[in-house]
Amino acid sequence: MATETDAARDRVLAARASLGEELETLEASVRAAIDVPAKIRRSPGKAAAVVGGTAFLAVGGPRRLFRAGRRAVFGAPPPLPEAMLPKEIEKALRGLGDDGDKVRGALERDFATYAAQAQRDRSRTRTLLLLTVARPLLGSAAKAAGSWLFRTDDEGFQARLAEIRGRTKATTPAAGEGVQPSVDDEVGGVSGL
Image (cartoon, one colour):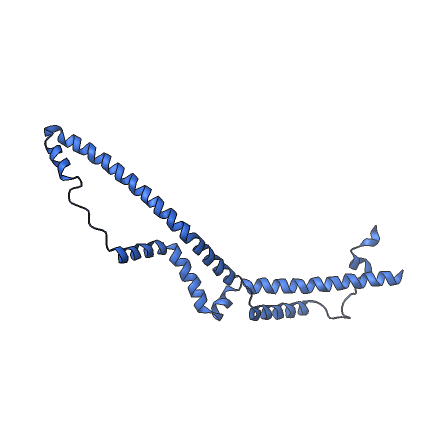
């Protein structure tokens, strides 16, 4: 009976030690992954690239870059004409007499509404096409930036693990010191059943 109890106690102590090592490893991994200042010190170029890319997206850089590229390829858009209506319509409006201003205003308002609607439709199509192309690229860039930011490098991980193990050894009493836990404490108080 005592042999089974000793074996159970040894298994519990081994499981506890294994859990403690796994917790140390997990803590070191998490601390190394979120230690952004250390990552910046180790590779400031990559950190600057991540910050610059994020800022570029935040201020609408892709849209501005697309517009600049379009202007470089196709040239600047032509300026708006002084008169918005064709000459034949201008002649017809002038021939209407006193009522011409009202007719002209109504026509211009209708044309402005049509032009605004057509611009919105073109903008939606352009935005849809741009998002169709840009969304996968931006998604993969964000994924790469996130994986770089939260990855655990071996150097930082080993330093954090040594730090945590040193702290753990400093807080736990050495073998033979302090009070030895009873078998009931190790098994979780099973004897009270």
